[in-house]
Image (tube, rainbow, N blue to C red; front, side, top):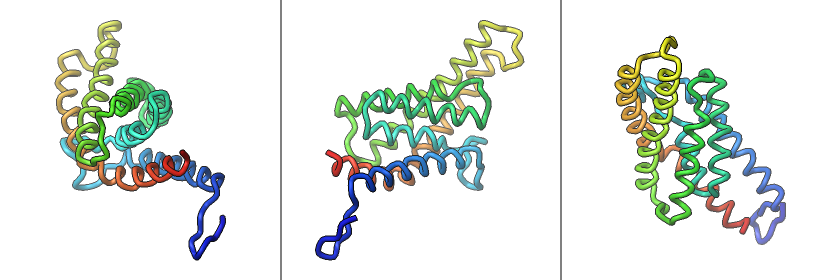
Length: 190
């Protein structure tokens, strides 16, 4: 750390280490919030998809490959909490890639309202990917203990809409601190 005229500045190594701590710390916070059901933030038994929000915010700042890797890693961690089927890794990977692709096409501006709309859409995409996995399993193994196709898609409507609404409403809670950090970090890095 160097000091110049009363201001302390971090070296590149210290900034990188701090970025790693912020990335891992924020992921762990989102992972720990995922199974929790706080009073007042549930809608029809569904809570915000914290990891999806994190992947969208990450993918806004990083390339498509990084968005896909972040989605896979966080999806596998969420699978560790919930169970291996249907896998969250596939849905979060698709969300990360689609969001990064939107950013590459300069569709996303630095606006929390637009990011909340993107989270809304990506929550629907993520829930649809989960329903598709359950549907394919039901088609391939009709005697599986899971719901039938009609029940899967009926439940999907409730889960997708509830998750999309709650996730988009809670987006600013994660967006502001992470966006501020990554914007400054990437600006200083380049």
